[in-house]
Image 1 (cartoon, rainbow, N blue to C red):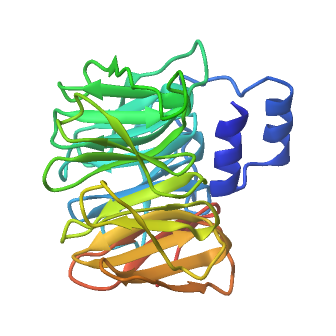
Image 2 (image 1 turned 45 degrees about the vertical axis):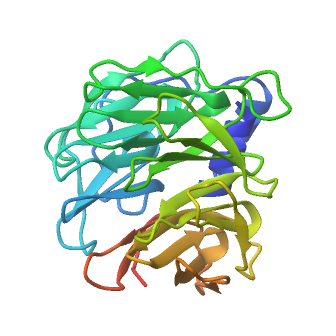
Length: 324
């Protein structure tokens, strides 16, 4: 549980009182009740965002779900969200079907582009959070989280079943935290994990293997460019790329020590965000990336690239951020 809270602190600055509770072995109780409706939720903590067709959907604290139909200029709060615990990740397989995951292993789903949601899973017995969710189509998906927790579904989330992972190299049990699951056009699945590890599946999630990037820190972000280049990034600005489907990895120079929290690609263009207002940009075959920091130094948590342009929409610990 301490590892989970450290990760959320790094991403979004969880308050001191939450850390105090963790040190005493307590966690906030799961609230299986609808998310509160706020007059203006655009300044609340947001942890992830995704595109649902042309719509942008973002998720965050207290079951918050926001969506925008004007490229991030204005937002509305989802009218029905049946859970009020923190949501850490969101993914859409198409313009209508989406899933959100978070604290207490909760999984919620939508069939109307994020306007209304329903619960598919929640474990009230223990707070073993999910950090990321990914679907290859409206039926087949995976969710990953704390201590090698991985769930899979083949019916759109009507049923979720645990996946037993092998232990990582040098260990006797699978106990690594899994932070970001994503996929390539050829069907290969990747999971950015802690201790510089990436899990890979080349058989649609049936079996998994660990690949070493050469780093030792946690990897919180991952993406695949149009040419098949796989990128993962995380702690202290470390960024790695693979040109052979994850067999081998090379470090990419970022010239920053600010942690990377999200990556996004449009064709071969790669952009990223991180703590201290970090903004990254480069191309899939770059050996180094351009790094700059926003003057406001806001801790950025997610980035959306808008189709057909270099424009982006940003999100942070304190809500929606003007795009760069």
